[in-house]
Length: 83
Image 1 (spheres, rainbow, N blue to C red):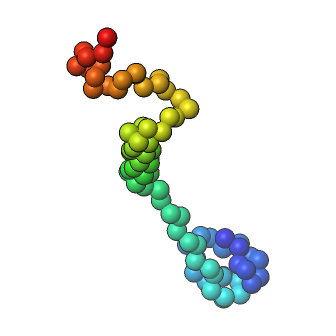
Image 2 (image 1 turned 180 degrees about the horizontal axis):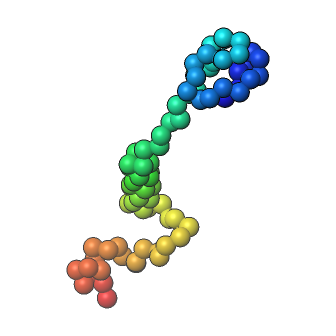
Image 3 (image 1 turned 60 degrees about the horizontal axis):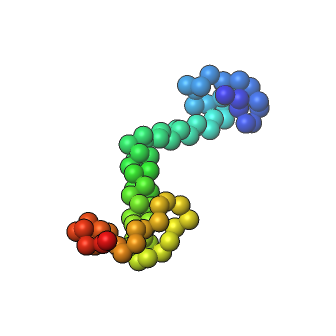
């Protein structure tokens, strides 16, 4: 690390510059990423998107992708009441 006062190189473990006796800035620790937190966030995003699309389909909103709903609804087709 270079001293901000005199520009002299100092080893990273030093707290005071060996040449000018000025205190050296302490390096900030790097933030470590938590892979579990990132995976949990993506899981919540995927669940939210799934719930929004499901709610939109239940309300009758046609989405620009996917198969169109069957004529007469799912319940009547499942019971075999449609001819």
